[in-house]
Length: 317
Image (cartoon, rainbow, N blue to C red; front, side):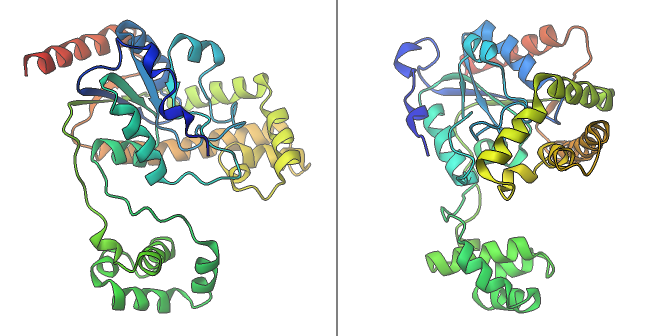
């Protein structure tokens, strides 16, 4: 995993990195225009953007993850994009560590994306056990069956077992994995340590989200999304987990001759809309978020006005 991102260009950006960090979060569902808004605002502040997208961290997965273009990244420095290979696994703990290192340089920074867990890891200071996935251990445990696994968890970590549904195998396995690797219950290693720097939490939403998703999906195909999926499949093999994610899975169905390109596009729009609904639910549960309408003609000016007020409040404090 490339960790050069942690020191890249900081010495060249004195206006950005000084004093205490000041974090402006722009969250919301996919296709709401978060990146475009962030670029306009960051430009006004001579700031930088930290990506909070769980797929944009992987190199070569570009069109299907809607990464900022080369021109956009040249305009505003972007971080936490293209930081590991597709065959690697970037855990939330890895992401949190790298984001904190960048934030430690101080100044106004933007955290932008739709991966709520990434944002929560920074904004709430989630305490995350640094235990990488253990495929062999998980495979052995899975053979025991979920009922036995949950009972095992109850014996070694009753608190975690009470919080995890008896049928939730993913979280049960993770809790057991952490216990057997560290020798300590996961419940003792979790919690939150909120950061001591100021945070403004904004989010975007749109009543035209389905149309936005359909438009962006069409643009991805025009930009060469199918060719990207074909190239990645040939290079890494179809068993690569990332190739089973949103958009990539549907385009692989087309490449295998199972469905037409128009059907692949339709399914991508459908599944993206369903994903966006889950993202909305996540962000709606965050009480400190201030919501903005993506379709407002004065969105940039309204968001900028709020940021100016926030920065002035920070200066007074």
